[in-house]
Image (tube, rainbow, N blue to C red; front, top):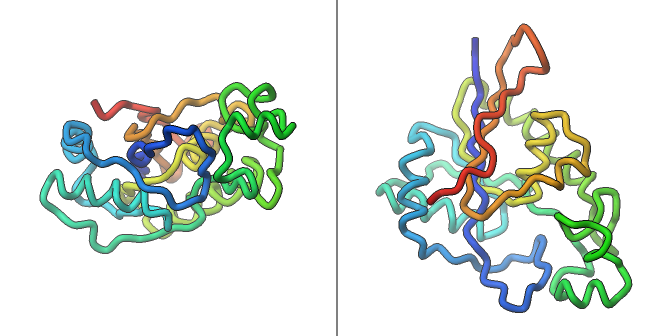
Length: 208
């Protein structure tokens, strides 16, 4: 029975003292936590397909994992469909400002910037994120069937992948906490005799 294992790592922390919404903005991340990267380097498989998103914080995180064990992620696949949610005109504003502008974001949803079906001006809803992530995971699972896939991604895209594996509603997926540098693993089991073929191995496992 063939298994395709997805090892999702959320990117390293983003210094954000003003608490701004960054979404798909290409912001820097902090890769100085050597203990976390040493642990991740030991836990994720060496023989794997390596993926990141076009946003540099995922690529920097991936290179830091490889630096911790003296290897290079070759070849590296960049997958735009696994990028973070685009918050459009909200990106760059502080969360306090967004509440003040009347979007109701801080009061309307406890775990995420906006309810799952809300579409920020010029952006996309979390439901749309789920649709593109599901298509990507399903397609890439076929392309790399039977392999380990290490994917450094974002909180939103990892929640969306979990929704696929667990059959979660969009709102239920947003209730899952995904910390920076945490490890989440979902496995696709071909020809499973029961259920829909997905098995969840880890969710939001801390690196340290």
